[in-house]
Amino acid sequence: MTFRASILTLYPEMFPGPLGLSLSGEALKAGLWSLESHQIREHGLGRHRAVDDTPAGGGPGMVIRCDVLAAALDGAVPADDARPRLLMSPRGRPLTQGRARELAAGPGAVIICGRFEGIDQRVIDGRALEETSIGDYILSGGEIAAMVLLDACVRLIPGVMGKSHSGDEESFEGGLLEYPHYTRPREWEGRAIPDVLNSGNHAAIARWRRAEAERLTRERRPDLLKE
Ligand code: SAH
Image (cartoon, rainbow, N blue to C red; front, side, top):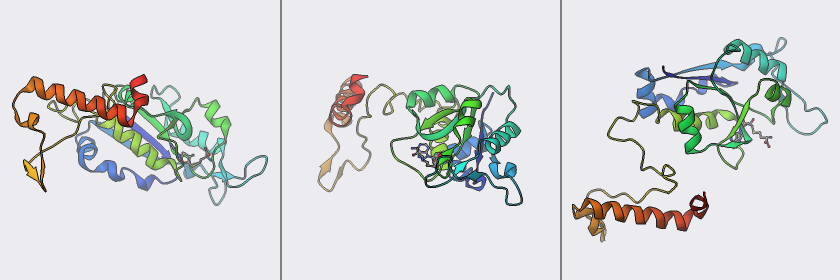
């Protein structure tokens, strides 16, 4: 079973974009996951293939029509498709490492990228779209948010990172931020690598890393310690 991503967007040419390079790109070429993007505008109305209209009740901007988006969604994914249907949205449930793990363990995701002011609420309700946010700021569209979500998931798909790197010690995995890293040279601009890391004492190194992870988390993200 491979992880299948289906994207609905007004800018399919943005994909795979950065996901076609490096770790996620190699995994894509190796068939460890797949990606297809669908142009919402193919289901647009009239000669101009309109996908948006003015907001009911007035106000600035444009809203993506429910009928157009539903037609695009129904045309791209069968109704019995088991994958979660995610709508990238700043109002959504925040994406976390835990959610990325859950998604990576599943069959993939259908991801809808918003534009303009957003999407008619009726298609969110009528197609049970799961609103997902990548953080408390506003992007101009859902495409980059979808790439963030996919990048976080793809590296967790079995076989993508390789056995030597389980990702278990990464920030957020143990509820802590990660300890600091060092590599050669041993001294640089008068700064030395902490002695313990050159000691060869694996227990002492593990204790130091744990203490540093706790210190950084306490200083920078005390909210993580409460959870
Ligand atoms: N008017 C909306 C913002 C629209 S931004 C509001 O205030 O909630 C346009 C599109 O960008 C959204 O439909 C969504 O798909 C995407 N987007 C913007 N910020 C995002 C975020 N933080 N997380 C995920 N998607 C986001």
